[in-house]
Image 1 (cartoon, rainbow, N blue to C red):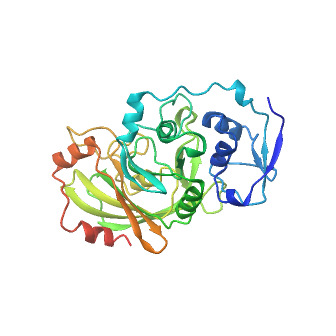
Image 2: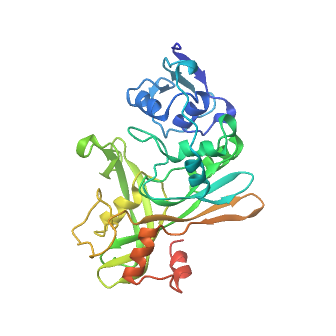
Image 3: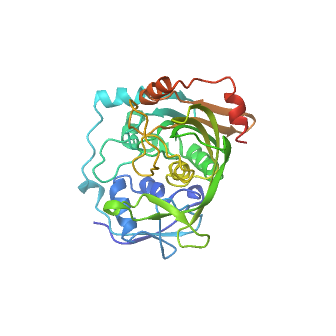
Length: 327
């Protein structure tokens, strides 16, 4: 077991999230252990309690509590051939900087309590140590679609900065209950985390400006098609990146996302449709210096394809106009 350490953040580590900085410095420590140390306040930045998504600045000091020695931590067993083939089959783009995946619903991005199979673990298929790709953003476990990882530390820093400054344009597709009106608009306000059922710390609720933990959230939306008053296909553009933002904002309109068991409304679910979450990260547009933006698109998961067919939704001719209405 190591002693308490006070480590200064280097220039090339600036803008890194605390949890990712910790994983880079101490790769033998599990994500679950890092989350536990953060919850207990044992990881501190310049003397204050730290959060996993907190961005570090060069010159700050991180308090690292006593940790088990690397030799005492059992290495994760190597990925099975099936898992390696599975994650490679999710790749939709690869270049010198990034790998992009079409993440299926139900697969967590990072590990945690009782989660042993997740994207961060599956990235071992592409390299170990410094060669392993690095996560630069997240999707909820039940949300499908485009997920990008960086192949180098320099690429991770650039991409993390782009996500942080909202320079990456994100487009989501969702099926919501009922007929959403008006057909284009925005939802905004402040959100904060609150304890939910069974002490669920990932429940978001409306908050007031200035309230502890309150963060501003803004989502633009436009309806691409509807199945009468039963359901609507909505194109969403989050201008901020808060936890569960799109799900909370659709509930706030009175039209929750189909399959969302946490953020609900009183509109009945049409018969014969999947109860899985109908939220898909359809497209990312990533700026590139001196070149056109990199546009990454992910096909719908099977349960959403089936619901689109059942509801009569199709790639309408005005989809481009719908997306333009979000700018």
